[in-house]
Length: 143
Image (cartoon, rainbow, N blue to C red; front, side, top):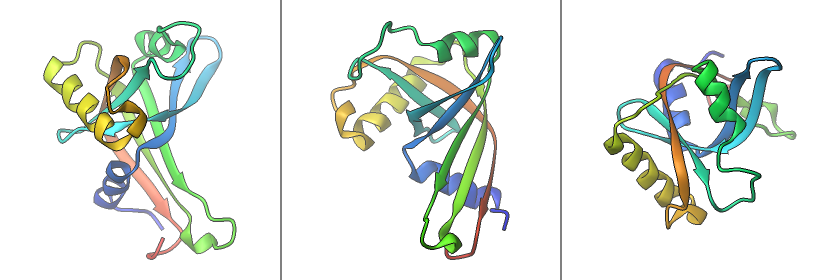
């Protein structure tokens, strides 16, 4: 059953992990697992941190968003034993190239409160995207 926009948004707000899909100019869809935070005014922040090893602090998702600002974030719940508990939510996003510092700070603060490894805000930067719309599905009312 389709989730209302309000229920889908509530699930998006309640989670911290999903799959961000940007568009690579040649390969097309380029999904990556990410942690994220949602601001009060409808933006999502995805950190680029100094915690996990990387070849560079500039990631492919940044290049992808620079060439095409469209993205999606997918979150879901899977239960192999009880399919009545399955659900997913997809947020359609648009990258914000030069977000206000107050918004970036708000998202960094939210990340530091919800992800223990980010308590000290070890970020190179926080990618910011505006939520364009949110859709979702659940197998049942109790999912």
